[in-house]
Structures are given as structure tokens and as C-alpha cells.
Length: 372
Ligand SMILES: *Cc1c(COP(=O)(O)O)cnc(C)c1O
Image (tube, rainbow, N blue to C red; front, side, top):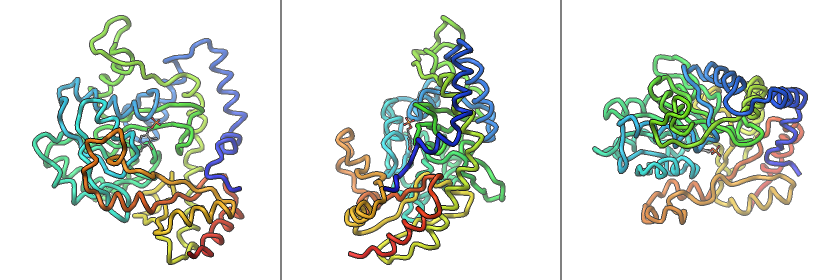
């Protein structure tokens, strides 16, 4: 069986360094908010080209804390609206509703799977305070267009970078910028299966806004800037020393892993040739880091069954759109045809950076032979 993602094999590549880093933390006797976290925050801020990086417990918390900080700073208040893509992973939407804000679902562009900038402006009203854009599957959103609408209506732009560590956007002035630095603040997840994965839960916020960074730092540590003095009713959402040490090791190899992913997906893009399958489209090589390689087929169920029989694991991201989840029954009346069609057709192929050339050839051969 060709597995979808072999985490054991991925982490085995760095085993010696990971074990050494783990031992270093054990021996230090210091396990929460110490040097490892401070070092990783510095390294990741440098990587993302931002002034601040704040380690938190997971990706969902990163997004929750950004919005919570904006509420504490008086930028928005409960009941305000946040625009978010309707085909995103549920966590983007949970971060909004958790804060008592209202998610306003906007449909994606059919080619990129990302927010369609043309539809955003129609969703803006006097309650709109932010756009939470998601670089879904690893591809950067059209940020010039989004920032243009945000400037026009004075909205905050928050990036959900959980799937896009290292993706690069070339702006209208031809300047290259990393995700995490493209809006006002960004949330990252380092869940083990993400492109930069810890060996447990972990996340981070990046931003150039010092006030926001200070507020999030306090909110994530019981609402306290200074020990035993609390100015907010905060939460406990901290990145721990062991995960930070693991992430510092893995960050060094992130670009190499992205290159491997691109090598695999470039072969898929040029060699998969089957009229029943729609391949993903990219703006440029650097704009996509291929967290997921998502194809579409009108015969998705048959295709998945066929691949399983041929020994190839595939997954569906995601089978049920957020507005049709029981948790959001208040949205069940929404009519989102693009999203609904996508959710019935998408299928993710393996793009594990440790896949061999042979595995990739095999996957391509099998897919090209698929017919109903
Ligand atoms: C994984 C993910 C999250 C949540 O990250 P966790 O670390 O699992 O909390 C948020 N948004 C998107 C798009 C994700 O893929």
C-alpha cells in the first residue's frame, strides 16, 4: 500500500537530531516558556519575514487568539462579521464563532480553491471587521485583491496559514513575500501532518503589529504580561519546550521538503492525463507548497475505490462543507453551489515528500488507466 502520508518515515529522516533535541530539553529541567520556545519563535519569524512570532498550543488557538486580541484592543466586538471562505477546514470558522463573531461564508474561485476576491466586496457591510483568508491546500490567496478590498473598507486581514508554511506571493510590484507576512496577522498550525509538523500539537501567530503581539502574548498566558498580574481573562495556550525543540530541527528541512513535494506534483501535473479528472491549477511554482494535491472527479467515489484496490491511499478534504455540518445548523439554509460541488468531487492524492520516483510513476500509471 502506498500510504497517504508516512509520518514515521518523514520523522525518521531526522531521528538523530530530534532525539538529541529532546534529550537537551529533558536535561534542561525547564519545560514551558524557555529558551527553546524563544529560539524557535525567532527562527520562524525570520523564516516568515515578520517582526513577531508567538508560539501557542495549536493552530486553532492561534486564530482564536488573533481575533480575541482584536476584541480586547477594541478593533472589533461580539456580533461583528468576519469574511471566511466557505470551503475551508472547520477550524477557520470555529475561531470566529468561538469569539462571538459571525462567520460570513464567501465562495471560492473554482480554479484556485481560494477566496474569490470578486465576491468579497458583495459580502461587506457595516458590521464587517475582518477577512480571514485561508491559503487552502498550500496555495497563496490573491492577496493584492484582498488587501485592496480590506483597505477600502478598513478591514483587518488575517491569514490562516495552517496548510501553507513557506508559500510565496509575488505582489503587483513584483516583490516576493512569504505567507504569514501578507496581512495584519497570521495563524499557523504545526499539527504533525502539516508541512511543518511537530511531534504533537503546536501552533504560532506571526505579525508585524507590536500591540497585537503583546496582547496575544498576555492572552495566551492567563491574560498576564507580568506574573500574577492579570489584565485580561486569558487562557492557557502555550507552545511547550519539547515541541519547540522538535520544530527548530524540522524547520531547517522545510524548504527541502517543499522541493520534494513540488517534484512529485510537477510530475502529476504533466503526466496525469485522464479526461475524467480535473487537475489543480497553480499561479506559479513558488505560490504553492502542496500540503495537499487535490484533484476533482465527477466519479470521485468510484475513483477512490479503484485507487484503494490498486494499493494507493487517498483522502477527501473535506467530505462535508462547514455550512452543512450539524454544529452550524444556523447556516444550513445557505446556498453555496461552488462549495457543495467541490466537496462532492475533491480527492487528495499522496504527496508525501518521502515518496519514491517509482511510487509516483505507479500512482500516475494507475490513475491514467481509470475509466468508469
Ligand atoms: C489544521 C488546520 C487548522 C487547525 O490547526 P490545529 O493545529 O489542528 O488546531 C486550521 N486551519 C486549517 C486550514 C487547517 O488545515
